[in-house]
Image (cartoon, rainbow, N blue to C red; front, side):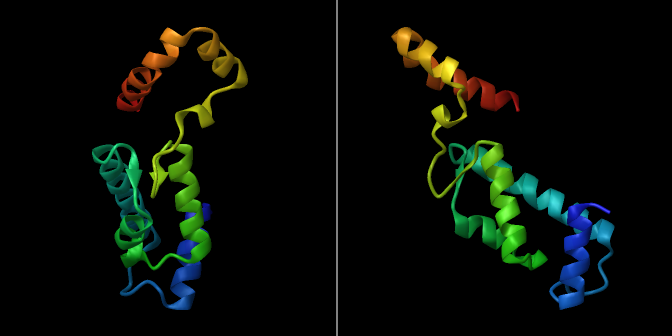
Length: 120
């Protein structure tokens, strides 16, 4: 069983999911909702508000713990919640040192970051 399947079962037991939606349907809706959040983030400079995320996931009635997992997933994908993610947060120390030694590269790092984000 996947973590999502466990959560779906938990939601169903607590009565948070309406109707007799199967686990597969909930998983599909979850995946589509997550993709919708990622798309919205791309449209907004890789950033979404907490309210936007909560509104999109509202039909699934996720618990606080589940929403924390969603936010962690988005953070791993370099999507900021409420504010843009600092690209340097994802750089290794060696990469940061290189950029410091080569200011022209640092100047163009934002362009490189945008190109890489488009490739995801």
